[in-house]
Image (cartoon, helix red, strand yellow):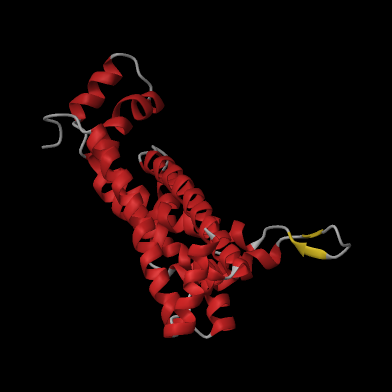
Length: 248
């Protein structure tokens, strides 16, 4: 393995193509940590954005007028403002209002770190779109299905969790897939508040080695492969959940 990594050092000496995250163990560790951070942030945001979408779609059908208004207001705010502005708002505006906590060295640090704010902000951002995606899926479920469940004694929550949501989930999976793919790509915005994900670590490396071209090409390939794996998984999931004859 060391011989493989040393080949890239020879490549740099012979051609000037500089890929230090391959031949230098320190940069390799930084980039690997950034890759893991990107995956961690993506998984957290994917999970919570879907949960927000499911809960929000249910609350949209509430009989309480103000509940529906709050959900619709949330959707409009997060769909109609840039995600970077939202990220800065959470990190700088709301973060500054929270109390400080004492760290192990006797100093003060924010209650929530940059990773937590990135996860919160991006989850709410994607969740707003997921609410509308799930709502469209719920509207595709025949009303007769809901009436039949109510006739059997199901309450509103049971109808949603056991009847309409499973059917709607299958209908809205293509749109949900697209939104989740976009969410993974949007995690690069966490760089703006110093979350050490792939773009942040790549920036540190090209600042040290002045190899912007090589690092940007690597990022393009890395995100192409990462998102490609997600698309393959989601498409496989979509095919496995398809009901023959339903929704066609």
